[in-house]
Length: 358
Ligand code: ADP
Image (cartoon, rainbow, N blue to C red):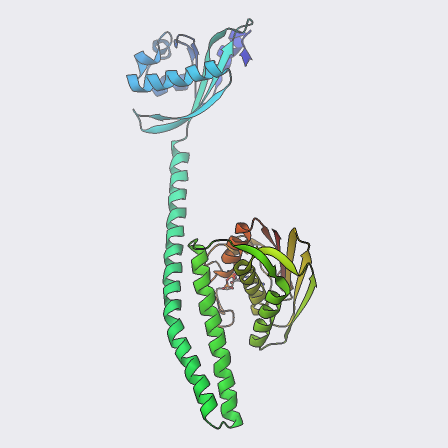
């Protein structure tokens, strides 16, 4: 609450204020206005003093202005409002501050407004661009997902036919090797297809958390065995399990978190180690996936959690993917009320840490 003792000081303040500034008494009569405000009204200063909003604006605008002043006085505290000027189409950010005499009786309102039309326009354009990018990503996700769905059937046919041929024919070691290669390729392709379909489902929010007591070592071992079967470079996977065997959480989420983080760690490591550490109790779980791979530059550490964002733009044949893994992990971790942290040194490796609660 502002108590007014020095009127001259307030007058001076208003006259020298940036933006449009004024002081109105409790009857809504302008007592002081600065030159900006008079210019805004397109009138000389003297013509504004002594008038009310009803003499200066159309009835609708005057009513809205009066309402804002009344609110500030009634509430006894400063009041901030975005005001649209119907006359000029501009938007103003206005602050109304009620003033009181020494006895605490209201004597008027000091107001100041700034033209924020440009800022609002930029905010709108930014929001529009963001929405467009999100829509485009959603469309890409849906297309990718349907292509992946369509790939499942021929993949199953190749898989079935390969198994049949392998069983029926007497194989030379050379042909046996060929079949091993076919199996590995089918496994890799199948894994990629499944990941894309699952990521798309999650990006379009088609998932529900269903918690139950799950046996974590079982899930981790399955994922590790699967990843090991695909490794064709000098990379070893270690893991340290220092948590309770059972944890109350969502099985699908955990599977995806492990698959994506461990899969990435292996993918982006040419040689060395991937180390998985699990710590925690029945309340909290900490998953740390550390690698000795290519690392992630600092300026990319935030954006790689957005759909289709990848650091590796070249060398796509070496580092396959679509940039949907980490956004999926992030969605799952957030759905579980947890957080994901990343630290990395380019050329030395990366560490992803996930913390979730039961
Ligand atoms: P994808 O692996 O399919 O490209 P992700 O969303 O899982 O998609 O990852 C996004 C990007 O983040 C990757 O393309 C890569 O540039 C970077 N990245 C993720 N994990 C690692 C890692 N362990 N080491 C280095 N870079 C990584």
